[in-house]
Length: 435
Ligand code: ATP
Ligand code: MG
Image (tube, rainbow, N blue to C red; front, side, top):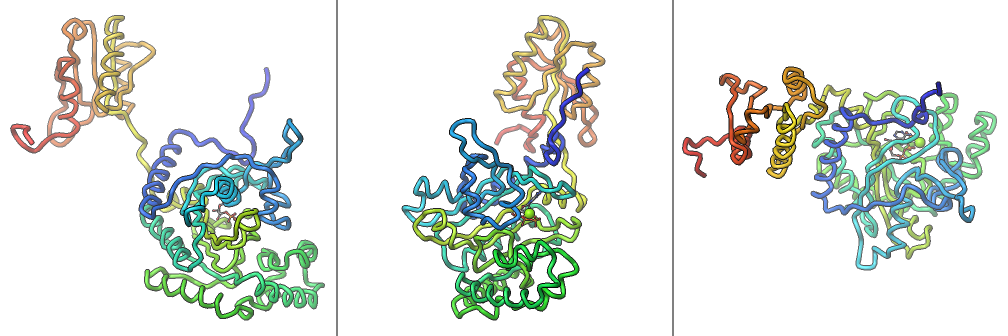
């Protein structure tokens, strides 16, 4: 016997009960994005590898060790399963010249792939909602994106997600800070771990991101970027904070928030929950004014964020929420060959009228079919036997007792069934039923 094939480690099936929750989440997200006038965009899952090395940066966790890359059969092109969406989104915008008539607000949702060690809140295929505002320079759009997140947590009923913000300044300011950092860490070279020593000259900023406990006090005392910022960068940060205060969105400035991706400048932010263990960041974003030019476009600013859907849904469940899976309106039970054909017609006619019908398939006694009808969660069973088929009628049995009324069974003609179900599902208060 051959062994059965399993899903790849770190890549998970989303089974029906859970998929239902995902759909609820996705519906909430779509409605939310519409209220901020963001437009949807969908990009391929596979892109040329250089897109990511150019956009994200060579000396980053993602590009150094997390990408799923392979050679294409044709032409030997280097391809990569997208590890994030911003690079693809900007590529698409440039390729189709979407900024020709002004700035754009765009969003997408879907799987991302990173070859990292699977653990709670960290998988190799995971899903993000990504939001990008391209062509806007001011702190107003940064603040709007942060306010958007706050509203989504509200819409989802999530609590306790705290906001951390920081500013990365501009590249010239960072260069000064960077030189100061290198000098500082060189002075303390013997206290750096191997990874830090390797990264020190290529990307010293990443040392601040280190999770090595032995290096924390050294990092704490390192030169701070804020001390190297000019008036304009400081104003951007101050204005952002003013807008957040106006919107009554509490935040904490975390000077160590640097983000794993190279292309950020000015604003960076993260939303973090303490209820998820080590993987507590549910959303991360910020400004990337250099990226569009870096990918070959006319210089234009950008600002965006991405949230991890798995982590948000985990938080949603941690906070005691549960979702009721969708149930059909009616379960259709039938017996006999003629009745089966009649049932098929009834099911289609009721779907025409907008009802969700689960047609019994696979035979069995009335009794066993009625058990299945009950288990389906449907509000009513529609029953057709030889009798009903002859008289072109359907028996309607209420499976769930609503209020004080006894569970009822009635017989309705085929032509009147849709109307009858309509009255059952959407009862009118008026005695005469008129509007
Ligand atoms: P981390 O520090 O947790 O590795 P990151 O900086 O690599 O995060 P981003 O690239 O900013 O993450 O992605 C934005 C969000 O996507 C994260 O805040 C997280 O919610 C989610 N995310 C990132 N990587 C994973 C993963 N491997 N599994 C599940 N969710 C993830
Ligand atoms: Mg990561």
